[in-house]
Image (cartoon, rainbow, N blue to C red):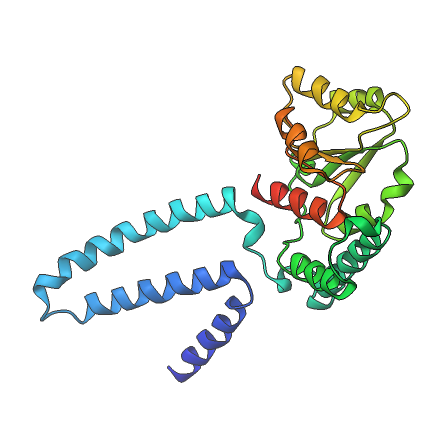
Length: 261
């Protein structure tokens, strides 16, 4: 008996390393206590029937709950140990922080109302609560892919590195026409576009309009030079999911949207 208890304790310790393991451990314990109550409940005749109903119905409820959790919140059921190792997990986080900090540093000072220390603190807090995207099964790899449309992709190098550290892959397009051609044969979790390009000063809206007219509802985010409230509102009215000129805000909007898909 002692060896069995020790073995269970060691297994339970492993379960506590991820949210999904904790849920599984809770289910096992609840079911075990209910079973013990039924086994030794000869003198609890009035209470035995509800326990038996519970033992029958509980697995069904758990199964339905598990399906809902996996389909709607699959990105939140992993812990650091679910990656290759915890050191690699921390490196991913540190890489995202460093890349976002570098992207923020190159923004105009008038667009930053926070001190350098405040910016770093907010970036660390954001990245710490962001769940890295796990590799999706065949046929759904698009869940980790973003199409970024910008005629000067070198300007977004640090931003892309921040996303890539969280498991995101990118396809790059330099123009509206190139983006449309790519979208004909590929599916993406999101599209990020600049606004002004060689084709026109509002080419971001031109691309957005063409995409929406085709019936495609892929989340669309504008990463441009303005962060004015009226421009944010205009982007939403035209069918975009967000607009910003701040790397940190873009990272948060896009990762939250992808994680909730």
